Length: 172
Image (cartoon, rainbow, N blue to C red; front, side, top):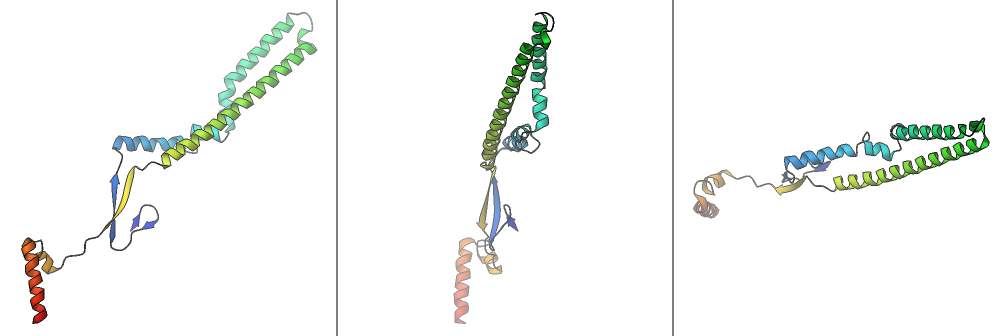
């Protein structure tokens, strides 16, 4: 018979378990494991899941494209060839470079924070004790005389009577 995970119960003992959490606390505790599962949002962030980051960055990409469009309009208003000028090209290239660096920096920050959150949550979960397991020494089996003369039928007087019989048996 095992005690806990992978432990053996010593001979002469039996295991017991005392629940520390209410059913509501146990449900909450169990649900928290979903936040550290490999498919969880937090784990995907921590592992640098490209698809997740692309999904998160899509609105910023659209906003940036709109800003480049506004920039092109401004240069178009400057006369013929404005959008083809080196000024526009340099401004657009610099904006794209700044945008890419900012996105990469935010991505690293999110990933680093997710790793820290994942470690903290995992540690917190692993330190919880929803139940305590313990060992109790088994009671020795009672003999027939113990059951009759011991605490069974006659109580303590029966135990004294049994001891007297045993003492008498030694002299016979």
